Image (cartoon, rainbow, N blue to C red; front, side):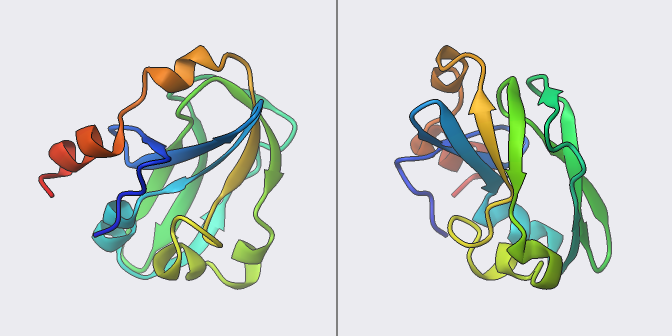
Length: 126
């Protein structure tokens, strides 16, 4: 399993990749494996500020629907349009083309409190 060191992680299996005051968020390789084949992503929070640990959307797999939790307080700037036609990108490339939202960070310090790749590996027993 892949745990990119440049990312931060949450106990709810989201990852965040920070680029200046903006960041990309998706779900981890572990999460997509647990969910199975992803068939639909439902995110309707563009333009909204979402508080840390609040739900910003859902991911639907063949057998289940799972909430997506915001790792930090942020405003949702953009949804990955590719996921409308190809939700399976979350399965095939969770840290690349399978990203879910682009956000504007409210407080960069919140990112530092998230899990490192090593901490996340320990959490999932990898």
